[in-house]
Length: 159
Image 1 (tube, rainbow, N blue to C red):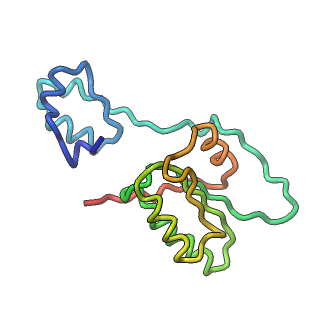
Image 2: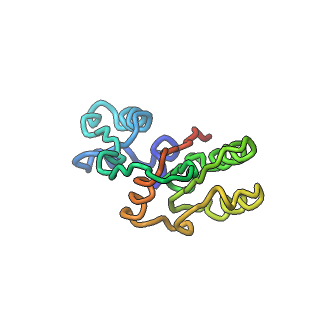
């Protein structure tokens, strides 16, 4: 489904019939409240989604050898998630001699474009896009997240 800020289809009519409308970010919530008008604005609920990082097991790194700094990024493979910029950043890190491994996980239409960019920039030893563009089961995503040193989501605002 498209963002209410981009394609606001029949929002007021939907609000009339709905028990509630849940929106996951403040900008979209404000737009939705504006579109439904004062009679139905109380039906529009702001409900952030995500995950509780406290459910991830914390494993202390006891390796004797220095390890690659592991970065994980999870989201839909679409322009506004900014994964192309994370790949650009990986190139900079590699050129600076900083050893890291980046795992991008998610479903979406940019899978082929992102993997082609990784190949074109010779980052096959640094960046991987997991899930073949279809995503991965949550338990596998959580495993990657629990093994990561950092989580990065390079989202951007698109037109």
